Image (cartoon, rainbow, N blue to C red; front, side, top):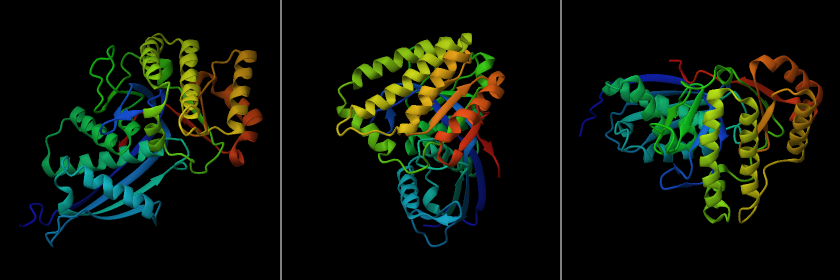
Length: 353
């Protein structure tokens, strides 16, 4: 059978940001579906850039033919993961077996350390693939384009579905959030107070070592966690409350929920069977110093964590100067080689080719 895409070739490239969850999702079922709804800030400076070159095959092969490079180097571990992912989404993108594919991907931050590198990388790849489909077939309106890209990203990494939208995104069906879905993320910024759209996020790199337990394995351990059901109920309540605080601009209540969510996430890890811990001693020291600083200075500075030891410091743009002085003077000593990524809430992914 001849290739229906004979003589077609092209290249597309997207930059997609990481995100930091405010209400966490931890635990899933079925094909990458969440046990509870979550909401995140879309970041700006922590991102993945991915390009996909595609050349129509001439040999009639029906396999996925892939060359994958990560930061300019072959990476067999990542290549195998991407190969399996592409094979799994052929029903959504039937054109894939008809092309030779070359994928190049690079991060602006360390991978596999709990800064949601899988979210930005899978979002960037999903956007590229949806873009190729749109080029070949046409017809997707922008809202449908990003909704499909979000759904495809979810199949690669659950939280990736939130990285295709600007400012804030919700993923997971929630009774009080219109159009929310387990299948894909939705944008969520129209009713949010302006203070949150310019929020800062300083990511303190306590360790850039690869995590001892992957997020995929951590999610699976929730199936036997004795606190799982009460956690899912807690997350639903927290999201309901947080939506109100985001609308009203209530910083104190925002911070209260966000910090509780971070600590709950890591408590769930410690209560799993087998139990494990991703926080490090310096993680705890930083958290303690943040609490003391906020209490003494009255500055709206809050922390959160993803599934790793690194600490995200969240604060309003208007407090940036004093907070960043505090970081330099008191916190960098607890970071790996003084590493910090100064980030902020961002406007979402960008097509770069």
